Image (cartoon, rainbow, N blue to C red; front, side, top):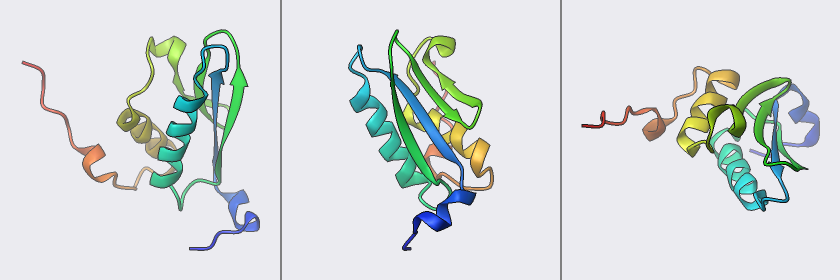
Length: 105
């Protein structure tokens, strides 16, 4: 599907703010790639925002989807996809990412 910029304004955009001092740009870029691939018809774009002080936050508009500070860790990509899906396309199936993991013994 050929999408031009004029078609994207009605789709949500995500922002990933990452700590440049911590060298987390590649992690942020990889997560952006994963989200853009999974939500190619639902997302208008993903913006990478360099920050400092150990920040790693994923936002949809003003809403925080994931905060490393609040969660105490980076998101597993499956978790992040589920949270983004729940926010922007709740009806979208994620295939294997929707399967429950077996409980730890």
